[in-house]
Image 1 (tube, rainbow, N blue to C red):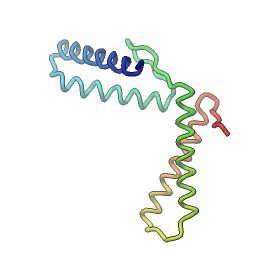
Image 2: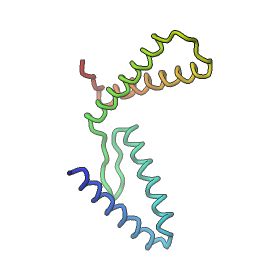
Image 3: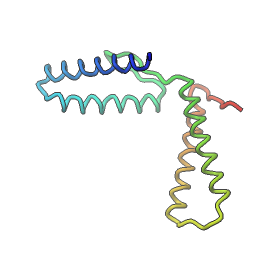
Image 4: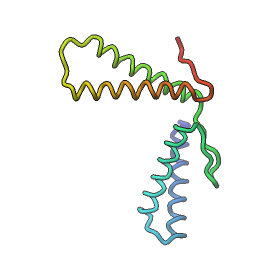
Length: 126
């Protein structure tokens, strides 16, 4: 229930921000909305990369350690599943598909290594 209330509040804030910006800049609301959504998406991506960012007028946005741990666990499970499929494969696969799978596994390994460095590293549960 709390999450729905937060979403409703966020929608109201977003709507007010869009409307106010459109009025002040004399730019149509749909254009302002696209710009704001792009900026928030970019901010979200930067928080994921850098753990925290500070936006003037909004405050500091941070990634929580529990989210980092859950994300790390999810990526490790996915990597293990990919490796298991690779080890149990009996038929030959096309070279393009093999290259794609290898790239996916390499990306997962890099993401795991990176996430473990965040805030001193988070260990997964045994």
